[in-house]
Image (tube, rainbow over all chains, first blue to last red; front, side):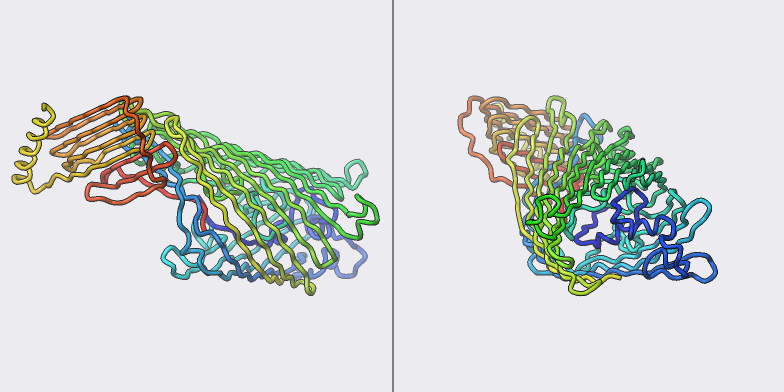
Amino acid sequence: MRGAKALFAAVGAICAIAPAAGFAADASAAGAVAGAPQDKNKTSECAGYGAGFFKLGDSGFCGKAGYDVMGFAAKDFATHDIGLVGQRLPSSVYAAGVPILYYYDKNFSKQTSDPYPGVDAQVNFVAMRQTDYGAFIGYVNLRAAGQLQDNESGDMRYVANNAVNGSALQGLVDQAWVRLGGLEVGIQPSMFGFARWGYSISPGYSSLVNTPAVSYTYRVDNVAGSNNSVSASIALEDGDRRDMEDGLLAAYGQTYRPDVVAQARFGTPNLLLHVGGALHEIHDVAAWDCCYSPDHTLWGAAATAGGEYRFKWSNVFGPAAGDTYGRLLLQVAAARGAIAYLGIPFFATDYVVGGDGDLKETTGYSAVASYEHLWTPTVKSSITYSVFGTSEASDMELLGPSEPMWFDVKVRGALLQGGVEDMIQPGLTIGAEAGYTWTTATGNYAGASSAPLSVSFPNVAAYVRKFF
Amino acid sequence: MLRMLVLSGLVVGASGAASADPLQIQSTTLTQSNVHNYALIAPGSVSTEITVNQTGADNNTVVDQSGEINVAEVNQRAKNANNSDINQVGAINIAAVTQQYNFGGIPGATPGYSGQQTNIGFLSEFNSGGVSILALTGPGNTLISSFGRTH
């Protein structure tokens, strides 16, 4: 499991430059990057790309630098949460032992006793020029995100929120890609994810991951003379960032095939629809490493669908509704053997390998419903409700010649988030957000049901964000 | 009476082995009192004397000992079923199993999970609802992972 905890992220920076179909309103930011200069009459050849672009010598490129810095203070009120323990029980029948998974009430009070400060800082640079094959764009975004937090011993430490494979240094390169026409190569947003995880500043249960990839997008604007657009994308992505493993019930060996991810989108000025799918290669070595049981390979899979609708309230409910705007997002995802695509906490491994080397994939789902209301041009609020569920199970195996054992552990959860944000001056916002989390685990062992274990806790945060 | 003789012989044999061999016999008693009880005893190659007492509707015990001296005593009192698999490989192997049925009371167990290192090996106990799973494993066959949400 690449277990970085993403508490906050500047959503706008992640999804601003996207080649796929989106809102017409987004074209002012994203379309300007993806397409030709919008105003050919301007004397400066770079002005048509948008504000802030400047000429890069005689290279023919125009460039723009930006930054996004957010500081926050937060309090996690969770004193207990659900912990999971995997074990391979020795067996006289299987050399690799019999897998088992327990859940229990884990004390986190030392880690959460104090409020903690954090920062999410990003700097980025984009350069582009027109070619005979379309726009040629290079983009890099460097990001350092983390917080000062107590560890299990009660000592303060820095925790990176965007570490990759446990490395904060790898996570520093958030995005780095080049695009020519619809072809894009480098560390880029996965084609599986929707534009956002909801309108809250902290993530709902949805997957937004940047990953090394090669992708191609075919996009058609102004379909049949309308303002609508459609796009289809396919990508080969680094599957390592999607491995959910504990090293015991599931342990990934070398995989030779990238994740295959596909996406299709349809956009109107007010509506964006998105469907996606992914195949994720599993090559287990847990049973092989411990006991030379056969190693097996199979494909996990995930699918998602979502939609976002923007509207003016007066257009829906008449003039009495006032001059306010809103947008609504719904997204669902399901996975089998590819749990990371759900964007949920690490409550399940991708699969469980049995003592005989056979793999049983874990199944799960996640869903997000989010609404954002723009009260004034500078003040907005949001509410997001997310749910998830996982079912991790083993096949029936034998502890002894006549002692069967198997398990099925299910974890379900929900998260409610509400926030308000005010842009007190251009490029400077302040905001606050509160959330409440519910999680329940249940189990079945050799046909006998264990008791449910439920936890719930709130969290609050306040932040100030400066961007350019 | 037969069981008493066997255990007496064990004490003599164990004492003799202890005086001739620096290896000590490690002993422990494990008790389960949930509705469905599962005990897995696999301490590896150390000499052990293990007693398992189970009281529940269904009791299941698997013992796999491979020390020089292996002693297992399993006492099961079940409402429905008692099952024991005992596998011993060593110089001295002694096992005693007592099974009683139609036992009425099921006292219940404190819910939770614990894992701790003992003088014999790693002892994990999971109690939840009607399920109790206990495992005593030696250094060579203790494989544990933990995960969950971070805070």
